[in-house]
Length: 114
Length: 113
Image (cartoon, rainbow over all chains, first blue to last red; front, side, top):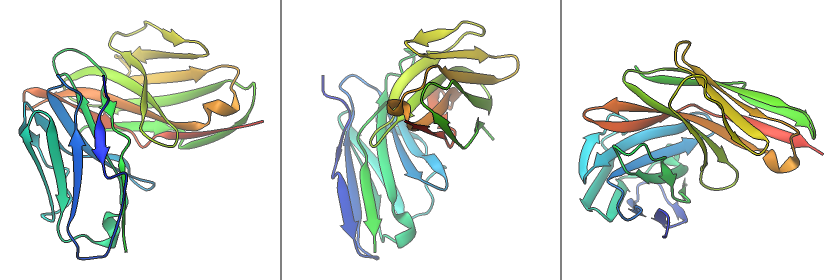
């Protein structure tokens, strides 16, 4: 079974550009999480979905950040416009809620905004 | 506000040493505590703990949970250079009818040859 798949692996963009990060969760998992990791703040939960419905987006830093999950096998995290302080590694993770299964991570997208 | 705190923030030891990593938490509706190891890429799962006092063990790694005092420890015996990584603690908690995972900032372990 393929794990959580994220794309792109690396993204370098200029300030002000739109950035879209993509995630395919593990088949059968019904919860999906977006995290951001920096040296200073560690792993921060940005938003999570259950059965494709956003449950809590209180971790999204600003209105420039948005996330969607149009179906059970795909999610996007969009930053528009991007700023240098958005530079970080963004992880997508999935799990099967109600089953006490661990969270499984994708390999992350390293975003650099110049 | 839900909170997970890990200590120490970083640790440097020599091969063969034993280390103990700490994780304390304050969350409502606790369900489980998880430990992850992160090297260059994604965090990889080590242990899930749900009951107090029951040790989970895998090779040289072991972990235990104390739900009364709200903490967990991760022990690594006879450390090797391959144990160098960031060790993350996460707590799974019920929120808005489903479950979310809150992470600590991690302990950065470096094992010297």
